[in-house]
Structures are given as C-alpha cells and as structure tokens.
Image (cartoon, rainbow, N blue to C red; front, top):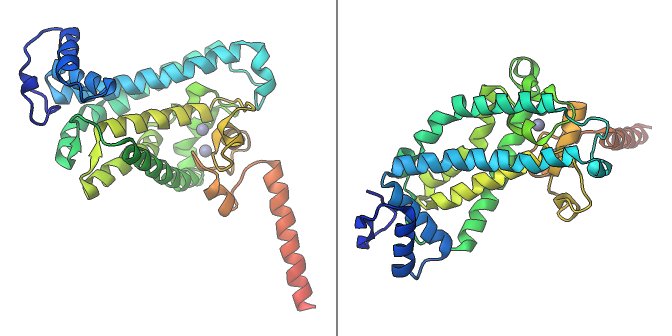
Length: 307
Ligand SMILES: [Zn+2]
Ligand SMILES: [Zn+2]
C-alpha cells in the first residue's frame, strides 16, 4: 500500500488498470494539478513504494540520459550544424558512439542499479516525502538552485583532485579518452569516478533532507533530470549562438567543458564558471595568455617597488 495519500481513503481503490486509477483520481482529487494526479496514480497503481521509487529513478535516468543524447547524435549527422561545433574536425564515428553507449549502459546497470533500488527505504528514513500535493514551485526552485551550487562546488574540487597523479592515471583517464567530447561521453567514466562525482548529485539532497526533514521526492527527481541535461549538454561539443552561457555569463555550458577535454587542464567545474574564474584555473590559450599577462604585470609592480 502506498504512502502517496496522507489521509484520504483513495489508496483502497481496487481498480486494476492505471487508466482507471488516473480517471478516479482526476474525478475525486480536483485540487491536484495534472502532474500531481499522474504521480499519485503511479504510486497507487504500483502499490509498492520501494518498487515504484526504484523504477521511477531507473527509468528517469535511462530515458532522460539516452533521450537527451539522441538529439546530439542526430545533430552530429547533419553537416549544417558543423559551423557551431567547437572542435569541427572531430565528429564522433558510429563505432565510437556505439562503444561508448555500451560502456555507459553497462556502468548504469552495474554501478547504479543497487543505489537506485535502495533509495526509497533511505527516503523514508530521512523523511523525503512522496505525498501529494507537491511543495510550492518557489520552494522547489530555491532547492534546485542550492543543489546546483553545491554540486558545482563538489564537482570542482573532486574533479581537480582527479587530475592529480594516480587519481588521473587509474581513475579519471578513462573519461578523457575523448579529447573532443559528445553527448554520450558525459557518463563514460570509471566506476569510482561515477560514484564519487555522483555524490555531488545525490549526496547533497540526502544531507539536505537529513538536516531539514523538508524535501519532496518530486523535487529530487526533477533535480536529477536537470543535472543529467546539464552533463550531457556540456559534453555535446556544440556552442550555438542561443546556448545558455551567452545569456547567463556564469553558466559553464559546452564551451567551458569542451576546453577541459581539449587541453586536459583547467575548467574543472560542472555548471558554473565562478570557481575556475576566481581560483585562476580557466582552460585554453586565451585564459593562459591572460594569466601570463596578469603575472607579468604583477612582477613589474613588484620590481618597481624594490627599485
Ligand atoms: Zn577531467
Ligand atoms: Zn567530461
């Protein structure tokens, strides 16, 4: 029996099909919006919250990740879009994409299957709600912003560590197989990297829930979708005039991460540019030139002081 309804007796509905449950909920729970009605119908239909949450997370991950990669695969096939490719000489071959697809799928099934299936009991322990109605949109937006900021901070430092000696050699090198990345390469990584960088995505909502006891599973699901889209898009290899970072200057986007894959050094953050900017770890020849100019200006000032 599901926890999706706090008080009403609707969970006793003994109609067998999803459609019948949805119709029933739409007729009797008019205070809920359509997404809330769908969510409630899903949990009522599944009648097993552990299975429902596990399946929801597994399908969300697979459908959203590979679904988001598909447009980039198609764009790679259309020469018209080549004018916006950051490294236009490197279009991934079908063989490369297929190898990458198989490896990512295998990693999803092996590394991520268990955490996904044990997520609901953890949610219950931490008080992550599955009930309807959902929290207000303002509350959800504030939590998404917080998770983006925290994940980006975690990603910056963990990724910077992964470029150090043995961490690079034995773990992170796999992700750097493609010097010109493409969408599918976003999660092409060593299992230890998947788990440690994945902490930034899943760990902070868990800590947040443990501290505040005020988080909804729908908020977490949407956050994971946004983060998947951000990761795939930053590996797409395309910088369009309408790409987000042209409108939000601190948004990282593909241009930022492509330079990381190209030069192997610098641009360690995931979503935003502020960590690399303020800690002077921006990648690429332009950033290098600016850094050198800044250093020589500093040296001149220092020399003048002593003369
Ligand atoms: Zn790297
Ligand atoms: Zn990457």
